[in-house]
Length: 129
Image (cartoon, rainbow, N blue to C red):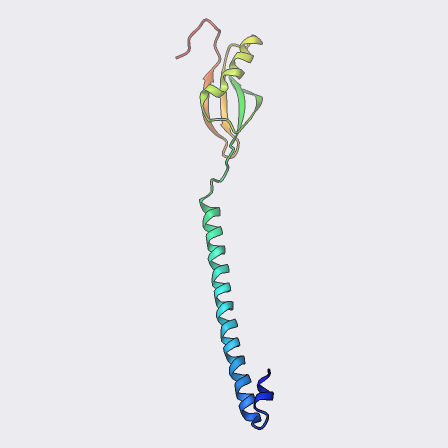
């Protein structure tokens, strides 16, 4: 039943009780709104922290080049490989099969153009220090 029908004679009481209910509802909504905004801000900060903490590039890209004197020949691209000279073994063996037993094979990080690993190309019987 509504408040007005209970207090038909006193309209002032009905008005006051309605305003009290509205004030309480208003307070409840404002509290919930502040909590929602605070939660949204917290989630945005957390997402930004996670984004900053994540590795910049999960799968590094590398270029493989054959350097001979002042000439450079591209041999290929390695995606997600380790930055170790062992990744150059297939390229050096390919060059040996082609008869190119001079120079060196170089592993270069594509993002920074930094030389990561080198391997000299030598004949199969000769050991390289």
